[in-house]
Image (cartoon, rainbow, N blue to C red; front, side, top):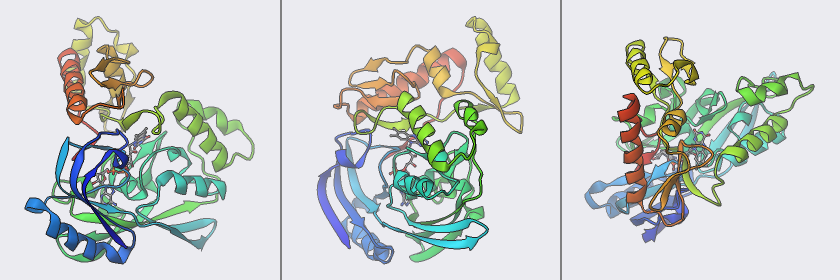
Length: 347
Ligand SMILES: Cc1cc2nc3c(=O)[nH]c(=O)nc-3n(C[C@H](O)[C@H](O)[C@H](O)COP(=O)(O)OP(=O)(O)OC[C@H]3O[C@@H](n4cnc5c(N)ncnc54)[C@H](O)[C@@H]3O)c2cc1C
């Protein structure tokens, strides 16, 4: 079934709860509806401007979006047993990711438990390569079924072709962005004991006998509850910036900046990657610039996790969020010489 909404308010379609307006939103809930939904959107779109949204949990809408938003809402999942405890699960892109995670944990499958509590849809997670606590969604993806808007055909794209990286996939590369609508995602999970407990507070669980995915899920949800704003209470888009990764040359420049700021290099939290590049938590950089818990108009920086920009009063406009973003980018750049890049998508 295809539904069309004209001149619609977008507050229910984004977790930042921005009260933006959109010319037209086209929603469909069956894989085979995709070609007709796209034709309909193309007929409605001024200048052919069409964008795809999932749960809207990583999007910053402009105040007015003049174009058509396509919302694939394909529901349901099928489980195929592959033997040796493995299962192939084919999931509709519109399924809420956490509903799937909760179900798989409850029936004893490992693979997605560390992603418990991430808002948004399965389709959005496959595009963004959503990740948390040492696990990325792309690791369990086998393939995705898409409608290719430009080629006007259904395609299956394998994990190898999806170029998964840190919050990255083929569908985010400039030449493919907006071209493919994810309709279904095929993942593989396993009932063989395979917890991923490398993240600090999870390590304690490794000594627990007969640990289950559901128990890891509970621990993850507790950690998230203690740090992150609840979607139903405070508007946010999760981590607003990516953690910057710098090479050895940039690291030297950064160390000089630390020296002039009287900051001990040993106090900088960091992860050295395989290629000797260094990942620095953006949250630490933002906190060092004094932004933690501060507001600018109706927009703010979450008091427990400065990587999260929030709609502090519930009335923040898109412009206020973007002003706050610019102010943070500017202060981190001038203090540390590092330019933060957004993780969120602008529409
Ligand atoms: C409180 C909070 C906590 C969060 N925690 C995390 C976290 O721990 N880890 C993490 O990685 N993220 C986190 N996020 C961000 C967000 O939840 C994820 O990035 C999520 O996977 C986005 O899914 P979505 O369906 O909401 O996508 P949207 O925000 O709707 O879209 C994101 C991008 O994907 C594209 N897209 C969405 N669906 C489709 C589709 N079916 N076909 C083609 N393109 C599509 C959109 O065009 C857009 O470019 C958090 C967000 C919030 C609000």
